Amino acid sequence: MNTLSNGQNSTLGIWRDLCAATFGEDSKATAFLDAKIESCKRGRKEEVPANEGQLLQVLGRLHFGEPE
Image 1: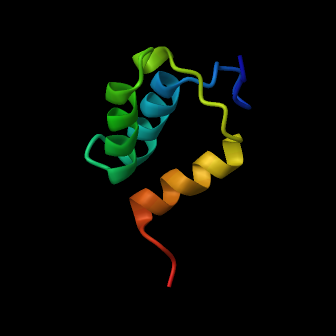
Image 2 (image 1 turned 60 degrees about the vertical axis):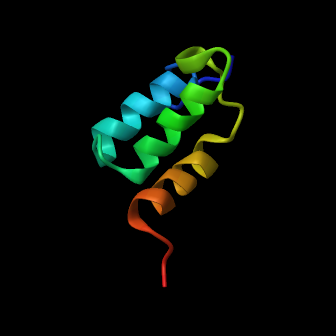
């Protein structure tokens, strides 16, 4: 299992909780992770194989929009 820099397992559930705490429950980034959780067989326990930095960039862009 991949782990995050904070020591937690890299799962959709952990990412979703961190995203909601950072960007809020109404963020597009949180909604993106909610949709992924719904579509995955293991739900919140699904491992996220993506590089932590890359996923942070994706979530930031979803929340803040594309830079101009």
